[in-house]
Amino acid sequence: MSLERPDTDEAAIERTPDELEALLGDLVVKRDDHLNAPGFVIRPDTVQETLSTLKQQAGYDHLSVVSAQEYENRYESIYHLKKYDDPTQEVSVVVPADKDDPVSESAEPVFRTADWHEREAYDLIGIDYDGHPDLRRILLPETWQGHPLSMDYDKDRPQIATLPEHANPLQEHHKDSESDTMFLNIGPHHPATHGVLHLKTVLDGEQVVDVEPDIGYLHRSEEQMAQSGTYRHQIMPYPDRWDYISAGLLNEWAYARAAEDLAEIEVPEYAQVIRTMGAEMCRIAAHMLALATFALDVNGDFTATFMYAINDRERVQDLLEDLTGQRLMFNYFRLGGVVWDLPEPREEFFSKTRDFLDQLPESVEEYHNLVTSNEIFQMRTIDTGILPPDIAKNYGATGPVARGSGVDYDLRRDDPYGYYDELDWDVVTEDGCDNFSRLLVRMREVEESAKIIEQCVDLLEDWPEDERNIQANVPRTLRPDDDAEIYRAVEAAKGELGIYIRSDGTDKPARFKIRSPCFSNLQTLPEMANGEYIPDVIAALGSLDIVLGEVDR
Figure 1 (cartoon, helix red, strand yellow):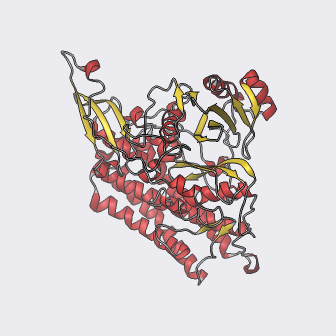
Figure 2 (cartoon, one colour):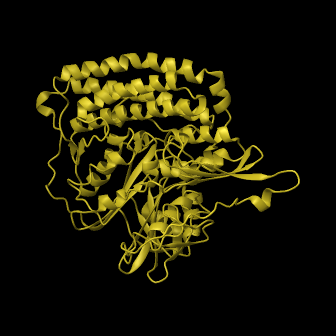
């Protein structure tokens, strides 16, 4: 099998919850175990010491997400930690803050991931993170009054969003007799920003000395809408709209995995194979679009590479339309399985799928001739947008962005779900750490996805008719236990897509938090762009393959 992990170092050795509690010692106030991980409640002034201990001495080097919420008697931040070497080893660090003065120590000095995540918690909930290097709003304008997810928020209060002049944040530091700086706005209304993204860029001559992604233009309250829906019926249509371009079934699986584990629902094996096949079709569609838009960003190549890749993407969309009845917003998964079986006649669907898989190697070879062998493309992407593996990990980068920096991390193998651990395929990594490597990872992953789909088709073709169970027997109304908490993730096309849910004993979540891979990956852009030229910034941004609907949620 190709799914074996390499040997891990001593820091990755699994510790029991009691051993972790002993390691943390007096830092632990009490235990608050979650369904997926042991949880430790700590004081709000010991965040950095606690996380540093877990990172340096226990190997928890991946801060997946920071969840935050307000209760009747307190505020609370939760740091969900994993290991890049083994993401099945998880721990939750729970940090309560005073109701009247919600101040908690920032985790940013330990994990750069916490920068944007804590800013979001401050923006929407109102927790003040002491020691944060840049604690200000991230999704809402600076002039916004109140915090929308706090209990006392007045949604009817008039808001005035001013348009302040843009000041050059590095003017005094870089203006001297030999150099000068210029502030440059890139976006938000520009196709190269891959959505409504504003890059505040500072140039020293022709080189970038600072770039700040300015997000929040597309906030659509997806988490709040999920909190307003019932587990069983009303939430599932929303995930298709997070990464609305091509990752619908992958998004649906993230919610399904969290809710099914929360409600202890066992998905039939037949439905798992269908899910795996559909998810990999979505991955190919996503990577084809990433290839198309990246070539357009770097080469301005619309007629050849862009349209060729879109043509192959459309063929995948045809298969997904046959399977789900939709081309973009699939709404095909259900808690406990899928909504219906494969389309009839089955032989025709299998034949159409095999025809696509048969021509795919020739298409991939053609893309290598058009793109990766192109001298101009190589000059624009090789050794530009450098993201070293240690920095990628510190920012919580995942998916092709991390694997393009040699980080061997893929939840399909490392935290198996669906039918992946029964199939033969390889995790793709590249060691170049540059824009070129991130594209190569996606192109090679298309071939691995094709291998997975082919094996799923073989299995489904021979599956006994009387054993084709597409759904588990799920109660009409789901009411998980009061105050149960879980974090579950899947390997989406762009990286780790995770869902945190806290239940309150009703049929709706009390808290629903989306861990967007694009959100964490976009944080790495300054690391990749500073010291480069403006065209390299565009290439670096394109290599991240972000969708702003998922960044802003």
